[in-house]
Image (cartoon, rainbow, N blue to C red; front, top):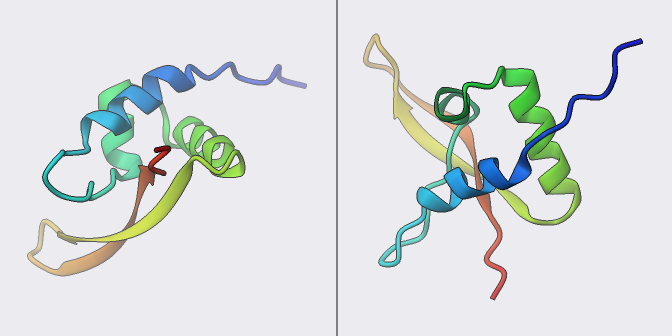
Length: 84
């Protein structure tokens, strides 16, 4: 049995907050974008996002992206809940 991985949620939260802007609603960040920024694998990012969602600190939004072959696709993105 493998030990449970230890997540640095503060690092994940900092990157998610960096995607927010003051003038408009944050567009959210995808799992792939978080993987690229953190150097984590997709499973690790998803587990960390699940933990934030379970704590009520995360919301799922839909974002449109254009794939390499030019097709516009809708993907899930994640953003922190405004804690004001």
